Amino acid sequence: MSESGCFGCRNADANAFALPFTMAFQPIVDVQAQRIWGYEALVRGVGGQSALQVLSHVTEANRYAFDQACRVRAIELAGRHIAQGDARLSINFMPNAVYEPKACIRATLDAASRMQFDPRRLMFEFTENEHMSDVAHVSNIVSEYRRMGFTTALDDFGAGYAGLSLLAHFQTDLIKLDMELLRDIDSSPVKQAIVRGLVAIASELGITLLAEGIETEAELAVLRALGIQLFQGYHFARPQVETFQTFDQLGARTY
Image (cartoon, rainbow, N blue to C red; front, top):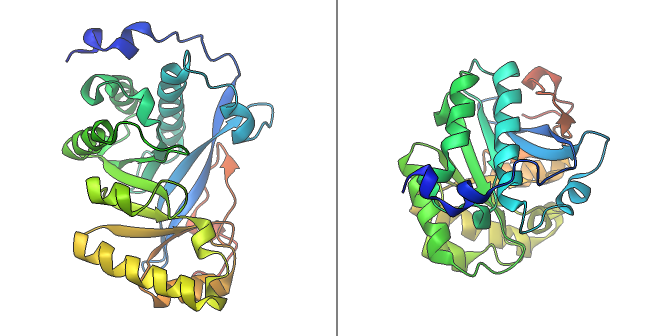
């Protein structure tokens, strides 16, 4: 399907999302390699509004335009600051805002080309707070994105509907373990047993695990011992608006 044939592309109103926004970036750390593996782009209002405040303005009428604008803004900022190197740029996307993967990726690829940002460094992560009504559609998006050379990730795994049932239908390159599953894991044998099982499943399926929301050295130590290598959370760095922190700037010991 061409871009002109995509319902969303033809009917998106670029001005439908009126609240000005920008992006904050939080590092994803490879503790074994002692480097920044990537950065997650997180929406923020230009007036200091939180992501929740910005997202409260998303409606069915402007969902597509907002999703596209977020991608472009994140890539523009990454192109200005981290065009060189191999760190990935992780962009959240709304599955319901992707009508047809090949057509709806056009603006993303155009932005990457304009900013000279290698599209193979893009990672798309998704989560749904509500049950996915069309799992086949999401599976098709994941397959197409992987075919186009993007990294794919399932966010908030272990919370809400983002769990084993989705994993049974399709497999992303990476799974982000939800912070609630990992909080105080150092003092919870039950959580440790669950994560140990997930590590085994991911290994068998060839999926990389990322532990998000890490806040303490104790959590980090236990998860490293369980075999996880990629981490994200306040223990390392808080998201900073339009800023890409380097590994040397991280506030926590990561070894």
